[in-house]
Length: 441
Image 1 (cartoon, rainbow, N blue to C red):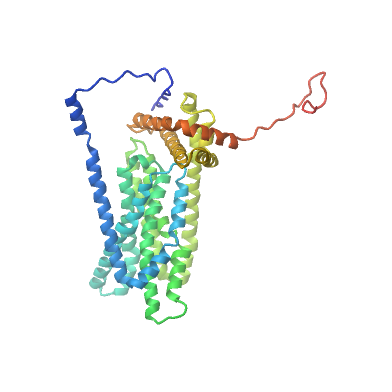
Image 2: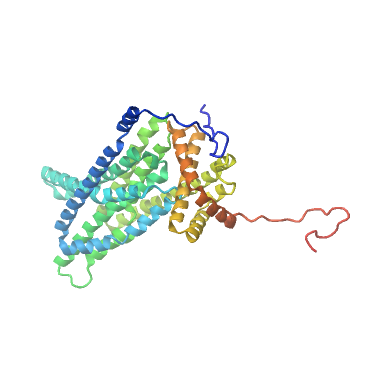
């Protein structure tokens, strides 16, 4: 049975005085510096990734513009932008308890809008043409491409972004919410590019038909893709993100869970995507039947589960941090404030009013590090601590201690404002010799 990792003593405790490190000889310092040079390699890797995404963006822009024409592209771009801010805001709201770095979200959206969209368009077009040529049945090839090929290709392309974050940003990927957010933002980027193509093509169809009044095809496409189902692609890919998120929660000894759950989530995403695409071949009644029977309940269920997980993270903060408060890392009131989204907001606003916007950012960073510490300790208490548990815990505690002089007073103020009221009840029995209500003068 795994033992719980001990709680470290805060910097003001008796174990805080560490002996001064011995001075290294110059040649050992040089060797250590030469061996610890991942920065250059990391810059090369990041530069290559940015270049790949930029090249994919240029190519996909040219392909979509060639397909829709310049005017259709501009119309599609304007209409496709409408659902993006609400979707991004929704996923950012889910991520407010332990927000990840903003560059992870930028990468996810860029990958979905550029790389994944390019892979999907090229692969789907090639596969559909090949099937049509091999079977001499263009109609059947289109149906097969939409219900079988497109779900496999598109969900795999979007899932690649989740895999990359899971592998190379492992410390930022700690649970189900992280998987949901990365998956949802990636799918939002993919749907954005796809909507440009569909809406721009619909506009071109209306222009070709000489429709000078109401653009019927454009309006119908906008209603189905932007009004009725802006959550469709995010819903599919979120299943893959949940698989990676549950795998991230698995312990070191639970290798089977870490290996099998991400592919299982990907298969579920492909299946739901295939069902959604196949509904269009069933006529209007089939489309609305699938929409009402599967899509809306699935969306509501997943939304409820993710919100419940978000609340569970806040409860985890309130349960795990008091032990650190007992050893001096937090004040007694801070765990309550850090476990309340309202108190967190009040603390940021208080620091911003008194010390300016940088102080509000410092409080926000403090809240994020405290949540990460609670999640880390929760895993350790349940025997799922990773090999770098102690190192990561010390890093988080050091980051918290550096920001405590700003965040501490702000959180104390927020805790005072949000503390649950204490009710005073009169005693059930009066003391002998003293009758009446003791609270009445």
